[in-house]
Length: 400
View 1 (tube, rainbow, N blue to C red):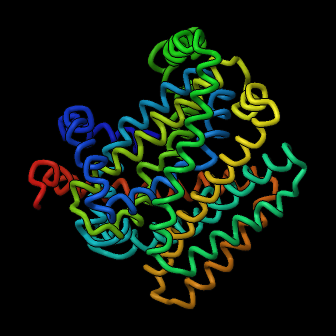
View 2: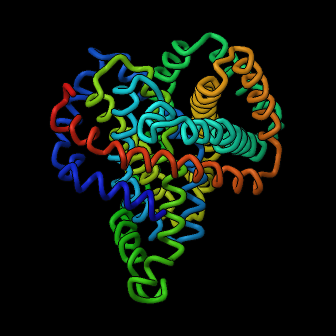
């Protein structure tokens, strides 16, 4: 937590608070050129598909349940400083023409930490990017319609395998189509719920801020804030959703033919959409309705249609995340082995794990995922700190 926030704060401050200072430029560079530079958007869409997963629904519900409304504030804080981390990952991956393993090797002048990062990425892909996603989607279909989670897992596997065996271009193209559709469906549903509870929106914001810094609920003083469940849960769940600092998104961004500055700006947009926008919508839906989980909110507001809405949303979120992380894991493994046979074996094991995950109880998988996510974070952030002069030079001198 300290390393993620500390590195994010360092880059944000050193860049002169670039995400705020150049917000207009960032929007113009990304959405303003979305049809001119399709490869840049495709890489960003793949990364966004891998980050905007079921954690944006169940993860936010869990964060509020454990850390209270104040956890949402700390999710925002982590996301704000995470924007420059994602910028660095995306920009460096384009500049050095490869994912995190390439710029980690460049930073340390050797392969050890690069191989460590790749190995942890492969293992993490089976957890948070696979089994947890299919489990969440399967649980919703079982609860809503009595459909076996295994069946949902198999459907996700069929779609994922079809895309994976068609190559990287198929992954990028599928993500470019799938991500906007799934985002629009979920956002529309959230806005509908918020309209129903519109009188509670402002009080919900008030509750978020008051709970984040309430000394009575967190033990008092600065120490109380630093040890509060709100902060710890908000940062942890936020990192799980936006993945800034892990370096995973660099694998998608490295496929772009764009400029480092442009791809870095897409990294900032990813974090904003994932956490500041989508996670915030989920949080406001929960807090404004007074119902403990997003799933129950949609059931209550939409009736039988709510089951369809939530099931479709969870399925699309899970599918996009599984496709994105399968792509990440395969690229990370190939960077170690340089073997197509190993890549094909990985695809088979990944698909098998997706089916297993759809019906398995996952507390152990969550813990293992957190461990390997953390092991990815350390070499990645240390490399970013070492290469920070390059990151800042990209902002000041885009051609370099």
